[in-house]
Image 1 (cartoon, helix red, strand yellow):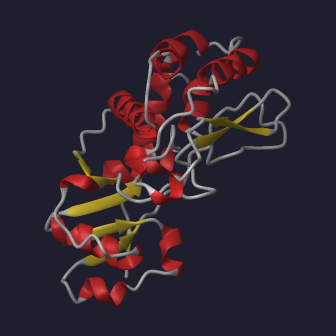
Image 2 (image 1 turned 90 degrees about the horizontal axis):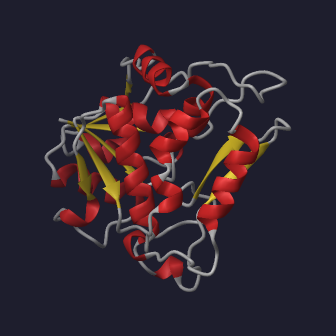
Length: 241
């Protein structure tokens, strides 16, 4: 069984879902801490000037690095939903797919959430539904493993917890990953290969800007075309180490 593992990001980029689709099971890390600079509370889109802007979810910052991700509360004093809606309306409401995409994701701006995890989980599951990804999602907190493990050892523990024999990793992990420890446990490490498809982007004035939130693809291409682009560019020739 091939497993992918990742933190719960906010409206992630297409490569995130590429990894989910290539996995037999995908573990969502809900017991790790939210880290600065991560995409767990924000993601990127283009504005009408062609610059990158962030859609950001406001959360309570007091002590947030001392609690698991699942317990990070939203900041009720900041109307981040209205801010995001206003930004998207100002920049995208004239796009031909605006109504389709907004109606599909309106829950993000209308429903009441109490934790960051609730927001991210709803978005991830909705996008998986739109792309027809059937991979089961497993929560880190539901597994039995050595909770003192960190970084490389934590990933290894999670793989062992579900009897995985292949771990599908992002290429960025090559910098710190000790592949030998996985091989000692008869787990093959594969590094994800993903070439982001180029798609029409109304605000990419100087050439394609890839790696944005998949919301940007939906808004520019519509749901059906985004789904076709996703599966046509799945690519399954992972690199084993």
